[in-house]
Image 1 (spheres, one colour):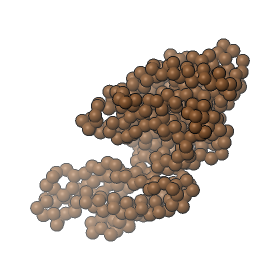
Image 2 (spheres, rainbow, N blue to C red):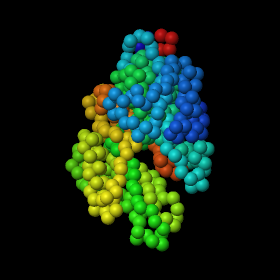
Image 3 (spheres, rainbow, N blue to C red):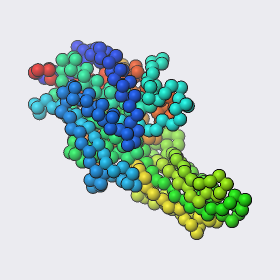
Image 4 (tube, one colour):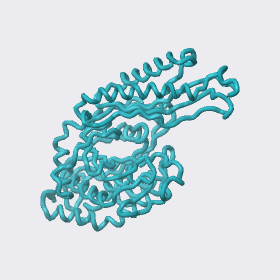
Length: 433
């Protein structure tokens, strides 16, 4: 039996069903957030999601692929060999009727390192609720959104409905440093009429996002006793010289961004970051080595290889103007993201469905458009495979920082929106019908 998501009573039943399951949803998020799923430690979180899907009678595909097997995929980057294998978990619900449009609900479960625990108000993997917010590493980015998507389907079932179209629920890794998890699912053959990624957007729609380039500066110096510093050269201070040059490059790129249609009104959209530094062996010796891990943003439409060449040119010119580096030039290693920017275009139908769902849940006409200075996995679907890819999720704060948190009321609204979007986009069928 086919049902219409436009029926007010069905919409209200779905919203009520979200509320009925929200206490359990919050508990589920807390359990999920307790898992420290940093890079290379994601298996327990993948196990957690696989178990949850099996309990809900989704068909579960759980596989691991060598990173080298993904080389022919558009958007691939090899992370300098630091990631050898990618595991992914996908659940599928298929009505078997051939009716309704298909949908991918995708989310990453990898989280960034938490930093010194003593600098958190409460332990990062001991989620606590204060003033309507859940605190914990990954609670906002993006475990709350992943949970919202799962419990949105649960709510449809409690309301007596199931999607008429095929739905895939993807749990991926490596979103924070390469996107290889999303790439793995596409290489596996998963496709749909739309992808929906509930990153923490504050119930806004990401209209555009930057790309990124990760690289490592490997700087070498000449060690000497600090008492005779003039006879040597510090790799650390030489690295600072290169960082200054890259900061000047950052300023130039941001001046160009003033003419970009999606970023002309965004202050400083492209950010250079020297995120990690290691170097030296002894406090009283001039350091013989220094490695600096860096990230630089780029705009939608930028050519990644051309921007990479500009980074190389900037470093080479700065080295040529340094008394030691001109004869001992630094090396550059490409260590992670080599990612294109992405703008959501040619997505009128899914955008309209999202606007209707957002209006029904929030009373607002449509979600606010956002141009992000970060990036998500949406590019793989929209840019390389022509799959409209929506990025819309709950409100979070201090992601990647201390005391990361997600607003639970916004998670409930987000769950309502996703459930209503599924009902609209995929269509509904009565369970058992």
